[in-house]
Length: 152
Length: 421
Image 1 (cartoon, chains in turn orange, brown):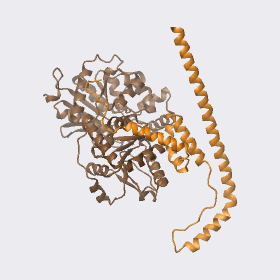
Image 2 (cartoon, rainbow over the protein chains, first blue to last red):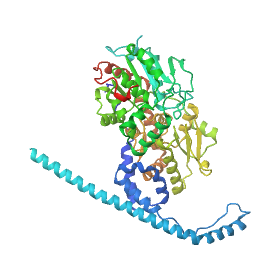
Image 3 (spheres, rainbow over the protein chains, first blue to last red):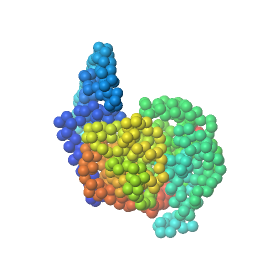
Image 4 (cartoon, rainbow over the protein chains, first blue to last red):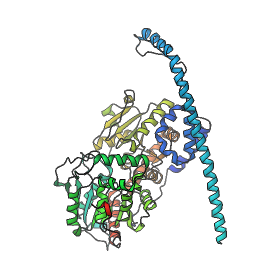
């Protein structure tokens, strides 16, 4: 490398320290369930490349998956944003909702079962692999130590 | 002709250089690597070195249609020669293989050959170069993913200096790319993390590596001017550059949606640059897609923003982050980009996020701390002026070429089997 390589180090704001403090705050808030929100799961689905960044991200993703896997099939307030049409359209929408419910409930219940099973399955596979990797890492470390000792 | 105070005693004062780029960066073609090569060539030409700039007639990086007239043109002090892209390339096969690499991360050896053959090549350019190569000191080509760079490295390994703009992505592990990294005289990297990546992936000899980067000129910017012009008075986050999944634009939009939903934050998002962003009618109320803006207006837009957010994990320099600091705006970047994280860490001019909760916390933290934002922006600007000013970059480039000229020629075959050009 040439002699004019870029210098390392800067005075003033310590960005690494701020990021570390924020990460600690995120850990605490996550433990308190602050991110078990479907909006977070929705946002994180495009960040799956981050899965290789370690189990911290995976824990977050699994939290989000648990929060998002169930489709909300409960009743909700039916509204109409055009005030003049509201007296006509709101009862009509309510009627359509009631008529379709017998069919959509059945479909959504099945979907919820599938989603829950998939979420549980993904989590089980991850935990299983996590445990196996930890065991293998321990074995590798033990073998390395033994090789070092036998080499002395 | 001399190079004034930039040339320490014992260094050579004049080089004969050919720059090779897949496109010529001007108002018709936008690209970070192309801009970098053009600027380096212009600076070297202005310093009195014998410089020619060889490129293709293509403008669009998706179609590679020959849209410019072949032949020579003068652009300021730079003589640019345009050559047609080979019509024989099978663009569909190439795209299919690109997609396969993106999906599966690898190709079969026969597919690698097909990927290389159907990459962007210009036989006319190669012929021209082979007639002139004996007169040249160095052929500076880039970026790494293009057939032109790989072909130049194979045909002229003793003279080829590649400006790779390397990213940690599956393409970087393909056979033709690996071979290129073993058959060049030297490499000019944009940042220390990019150089370390090359050394990690290919075991590149440190003697053949130099960090040079691109210089930026300081500029004046006026955020209020941008706000007045666009009638935008809400606080906003900005992203400038290519808008596409590889650059993380959809991720930024999703994160901003979640932020607005969870915190009822009245913050807007301004996007500038090329590429399409599919937005719903509801999204258009708070996402302002302004397309490609004139440079001054882009700087004004940066200056008026709360933060510049760069969600890409694939950057070798991140010019827009450096520009944002020059516009005195701090940044939030994707932690998976070692380059962007390194800029932020060394300058103190920005923070980095690995997931949505970190993005949210950092955004809320910075939003509440105006004085900290100002300090970070000032530090970012000082960092750019210190490390990426043209005099610094030119010194690094001159020193690198001098060091490369003293190396023994790359002891590698000139051409390799099926990948012959």
